[in-house]
Length: 373
Image 1 (cartoon, rainbow, N blue to C red):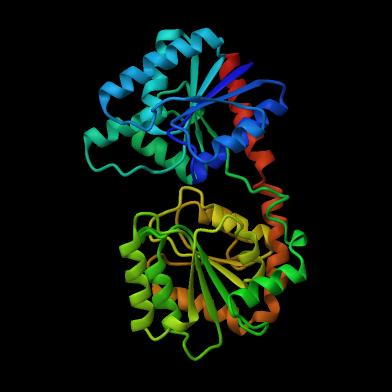
Image 2 (cartoon, rainbow, N blue to C red; image 1 turned 30 degrees about the vertical axis):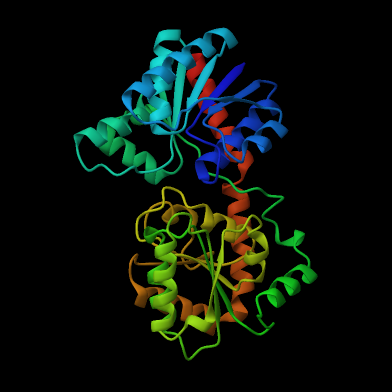
């Protein structure tokens, strides 16, 4: 088969990672893998997997650009004899839908996020993600969202939870010397209790909640790592640093920016936090932390309700509550000797349910269902 994935760009993010992971899997199945996007820094990695990249300005959202991109895609679909199109983001999905209608080729979509619905126009724009013959949801939470907001039949929805790379997110692949070097580089001692919050610096990821929770624990010995880039939100980063200082914890909170190798920071952590104040569509942080044998404390909504076993592989707390988060952190601090057993259970849990191979097999199964109809 020749399978074309269509997305806005190939920079950072869960959509992009899923696109690359599936591109490689398609090749492993003996099929031809092609991705159309506006490009980005992950194109080189995509090509290394053996996939082909087609550069198109699919990031543009205006109706004229969507129509022009649709005509370009139709021409490519016909010339390359594409068997199936898989759309992963909204504006490209509109172009792909039009192109597939014109070319007579089947289309499937992956619904990666909730996409805010402020009005009818926004709902219509978002609906490109349910215009394929089948829809892949990345969690049960997203499946429910699609059914309730876009009136899609449950029989047309397949679930393919996101997965972690078993080789990359493996604590056995991080040496004691690596962890020692990482700690020393941050000025951390072996006795420091390390609390890590990964995620890009954007308000809904809950960094302010995290800092307010830490302020309740000033009498305890801990150091906190905030790992994530600010991008264009440098003002928000300054706001966070100001907040940390005003709470009297500025000297114990380390802003590390974007990191290409996050596993070393998971490795030195005692506990990992996902403090999102809006529901995560899936939430890779929770799965990656557990894969690294680290207990996770996550806000109790969205995908975290599926990926975290409360009291078994980590803990859930009411979202947007600094006090509740502080209570869970205190539980971890006061029971540090038990965290290793929690981490062991966490690794077993995600190995069983959330690997890249499982994710890709689920998407492949959805392809086969569609092509057999």
